[in-house]
Image 1 (tube, helix red, strand yellow):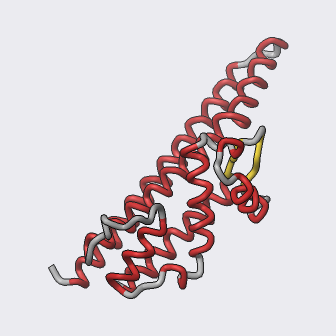
Image 2 (cartoon, helix red, strand yellow; image 1 turned 90 degrees about the vertical axis):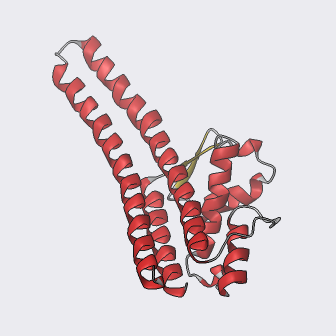
Length: 196
């Protein structure tokens, strides 16, 4: 298989996987919204049913929807790491012996095998910040008071204050941040595939 065909195959596969992930998020969101609408249609004028609908809507808006966004963010981050692995394994290899973790290990592998400096990608700092948010969500269930370095995470949250919120010390990303993350993933994918 020629390198050009391999690149095209990787490009297609990576785009397809990311499209499936965002499709999943949008479908769950649609189904939850439809459930709210059907519940609203079934309600009568009774006060009790109106209260039940208000409770369901509040539960959706305050609990389900924010958790759906956080979970989609975590899946997108896993996709980002998978993408790095696919690109590296397709053309070189990941340095298994590396003592680095997270995005740092990929930075080291791309530098060693391709002389690609990931920090020269314009969105690199955004991805590094996303990595910190991912670690907080995954390892501390989003609760910054459980982190070893909560100040670092608080500074990142301040940096994206419109898109990342703290509620009762727990991190929640919004759809704007999720969309920005999706764009950065697409950009770094295209940038890397041009360089390998």
